Amino acid sequence: MRDPPPCRADAVARPAGRRGFLYWNGPQLYGAKWRNFKMVLVEQEYLTDPALPRNFPRIVNLMTDPKEREPYNVPHLHTWTPPLDYVPHPTE
Image 1: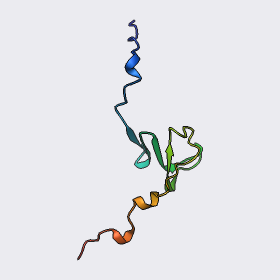
Image 2: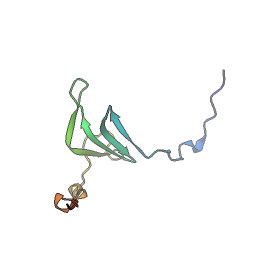
Image 3: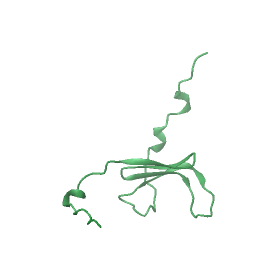
Image 4: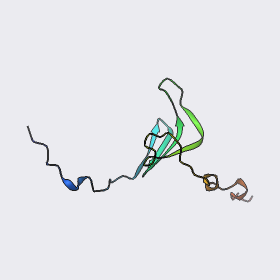
């Protein structure tokens, strides 16, 4: 039986190779995590409840709220998407 490798002091100081990831359940995207933020698109409170898509993504800052009690306050989130009047349409 081999001994485990010795613990290195600088192992904690090195950044992780992955900054974020998407999480899927079957063909449906349930959410994403990027750095300190988590975005939930589909929510299921209990295991027996149906998974319901959210009307608006719930964004949580995991550094300031690790228990995910309050969504992140983004006052201008609605301005990230362009109004439908400005979406270019192909001319016929």
